[in-house]
Image 1 (cartoon, rainbow, N blue to C red):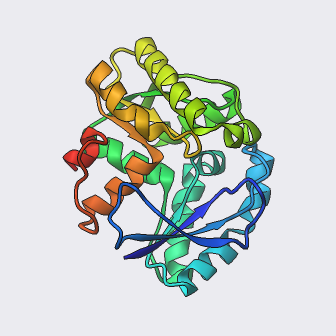
Image 2: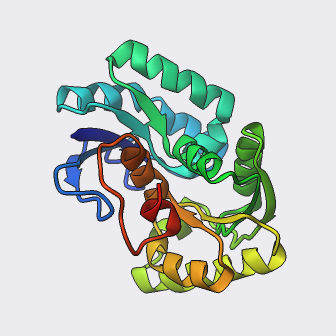
Length: 239
């Protein structure tokens, strides 16, 4: 199964197309990637980069993608849920393959878990955090706590693996301590290697913890495209 991922890519290389490994998915589930060349996660940066969405979508379908996902929680959050839902419908109409987004995969996973109160371990700036809160509220999910490190795209892409893991654990613990009644913990964003923190945080707080990658993998598992995964969170073990 080959699917297409339309991501932010900080370097502006919207023409780049590569095959990316997905550690939570089997080798026969292949990810093709194109980037829309985002300059920043601000509303202006997202709007400018988003003009390249359709060129990316059409190229991925030509390369054999059987579904398309708009990646990047900041992108969907700044666009707003109404607009993203319309985009998903339009993607199917214009390309002939199903559309999706990271935000919608997260929402579907949280709904599967019965989550209505959520703690969010975010490193983003306040404006972007509020856009994410609004997006989730549209789906009936209340953000009980959300952390911030004031990051925009430049800071997010500059983190190394070790910094990302340490920050994920620290912010995950802070978010849960600020909302001990939260039913789940979300660590949004794909650049900080937060997957490694998931077993630690689930052990600490006894609630499901999700990342972008976990929600995306769950989407394929729930559709019967990929098998359950052990060791990387409750959601993937019992989809």
